[in-house]
Image (cartoon, rainbow, N blue to C red; front, side, top):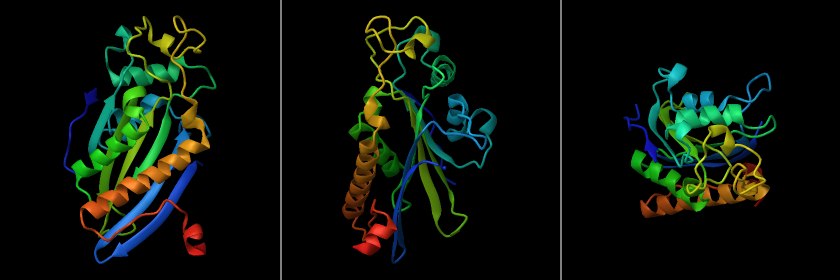
Length: 239
């Protein structure tokens, strides 16, 4: 597992936005959205290496906003060409796959300002482990933390999680990086198999419900009255 340094804390898509509550000085906010490889304003897929550099504020995004609080990558396939370097992996994912393939799935999650950085990192780890991402997929995630433009008295803390849907098998050694992204038509010569679960509506539903659960569990553990809901405001009002 590759880890980046910790630093002090100073986008159409399947979107789940939910409840925002204020109890005393507590504010809980819910947002979780997922999409299959981001697209730019022209409708073209965003290069996976560029997206990685954007979320980790590296490369040409090194000085952007200076809001990077934490970043981490892991589970790189066993391939000498990659040199266990996540940047080499994301570059290969973008250039080696078929035209209609997805280099990564993008998940954006709002984090809570009531929780410490370490607690929010643990929440992301819990989320990934629950869905097997940390063990079965190659991933990178970054936490951004800056003051909210709409409410300067609050912080906008969120996580960008990107992962490839292919199931990593560390027992296989790939001679060339491009072999990883071939069609999985042979367990010996084919590429890694794509997990269809992440393209299903079930993943979206399961993800939003689980994120609600673990956040509310943490609020209770910390003795806070704030709660979040994965239900839309329209549904909540109807209830």
